[in-house]
Structures are given as C-alpha cells and as structure tokens.
Length: 259
Ligand code: MG
Ligand code: MG
Image (cartoon, rainbow, N blue to C red; front, side, top):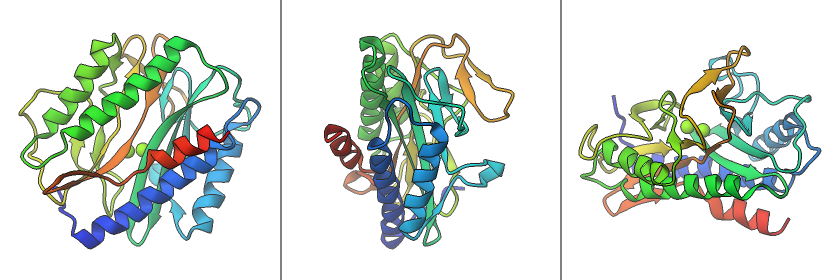
C-alpha cells in the first residue's frame, strides 16, 4: 500500500532528511585515514541525538548501530567496527537514518578517503550521476520503471553493473514503505508516480560483476569479485511540479571542499 503524504508530512520528512544530510556533512569532516568506522558511528549518533532525533537504523530489524558503513567492495549494510580503520585510497559508503516527529530520514553518500584511484573516482561520479538521472524521472505520470531504467542505462553505459537484490523504497512513518524502487527496469512499467509519494532512490553500482555475497555477520553485503561498489541515496517527494529532493548533498560537498 502506497501512502500519499500531506504537505505538512513532507516538511517533517524534509526536516529528517536535512538532518541526515547535516550528519553526513559532519562525518565528511572526520573521514580520513586512521579513523575507525565505529568512531564515525559514535559521531553520527551524538549529532543526531543532539538535534532532537533518534538514529533511524539503531535496532531496526536488530541492526546494532546508527550507521551502515561499507568500505570498498562492501556494497551496503556494513557494521561499524573499531577494527575497521580507514586508509588512504579507500572509498566508504555511509548510509544514515533519523527518526523524529513520527517520520524517517534516509540518505547515503560514498566518500573518498584521501586520494583515490581515478577509476574509483569515476565510479563514484557515475553513480551520483545515475541518481540524478533517476530523480529527473520522479514526476507525476511517470512510473517506477522510468526511474530504474534511467539509473541502469547511465550505469551500464559506463560499463558498470547494477545490484538487483537491494532496492530503493517509499519513505514515511516507516523506513521501508511501498513501492519498491529498483535501480533497473523498463520504461513505462511499475507503479504510477503521484503527487504526495515520497521515495528513496538509491543506486548501488558495482565496478565489476553485479553479483553480491552476504557476509557471515548476517548484514554486510559485498561484491562477489571484491571490486569496489558505490551507493548514493536521496529521499524525493513527488509534487505536481516534479521532484522535490528532501536530501541536501550541497552541505556535504561544502564540508568536503573545506577539508
Ligand atoms: Mg539508506
Ligand atoms: Mg534507503
């Protein structure tokens, strides 16, 4: 069942997703060689709580932390650990959620740790571009398949592959609502987009094979070939005037520029 949101509810969702964006910007100031992923988790939890929200992921389906932090070949759902120390040349995908005023925020960004290889930098750029291509389709009258087609087409044009097992989703009073939002698909197929829908578009794009493996910790997903993966996520409201992105990457990128 797809829940359409009122304008007021969309503003509460925006507040949540702007807090997620601000949290990711705070993390951008701390991501460097030598930091552990558990330290990042603590910074995020403190930041979220100090702004009157609770971490949306903590305890969600039993998840033990506030962030999903996935390094290099890890695709999503990496568990923060004091044993995972970031090093020069890594890429780290940080997925962050908040909950306040009865609604969730959910957005993700993949960061470079120091200088990274050109081919990895290209993967990050194309994954973010693919997200924007998907967002451009998030208009009334389009369908979920139009979003997925746009993401897939852009990623595959650059020789990358699209993870199939995990998908985007509706966002609201629950973290994962209908509809599912795959990062692949056929134009003109799937649920119709209507004003009031809020969806998370979140391409997970692999440099090599699209095949993934679930690690024994029960959460972490990695690429089968251990080549890198990237993940960017926006929450987007569908309005009569087109997509209204509730996430703000500009605050993250400003923080990165000032590092
Ligand atoms: Mg997310
Ligand atoms: Mg999500």
